[in-house]
Amino acid sequence: MVDKAAHILLVGVGGFLGSVARYLVALWMAPITAVFPFATLTVNLLGSFLIGFISELALSTSLISPSTRIFLVTGFCGGFTTFSSYMIEHSALLRDGEHLYAALYLFGSLIGGFIALYLGIISARWMAG
Image (tube, rainbow, N blue to C red; front, side, top):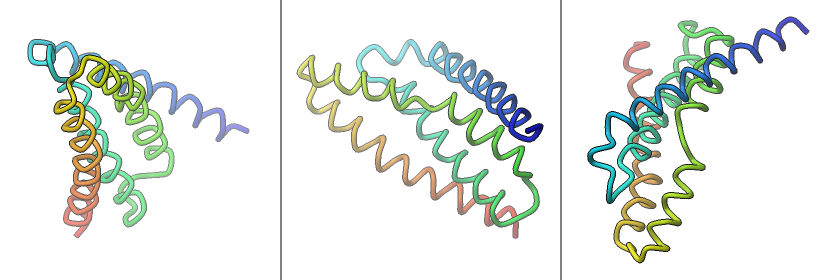
């Protein structure tokens, strides 16, 4: 039970830090997000990269312990990435008739997310040697 309690705490602290980081990115990018949700796209792409990078290092090396992986992937990245924000922003673009932006956001998030994920995996493999 101690491991579960510790993991819950790690997820909670990581989620808190990830959420704060997401909010700071949103504040930083606020001047350019009036028409297109660049901040959400940025955190989702960066989060995809980090999840790929951290997961690959955790699976293929001993550089990242299971507890650290839980803290970083489930906690931090879970709090940092924003699928629910993505969904509401995408629906707002559609509602407002911004079909081109909606399509760019959809494909940019999906394709960019996969690319970022695999870049994270490749980077981790390169780093691990």
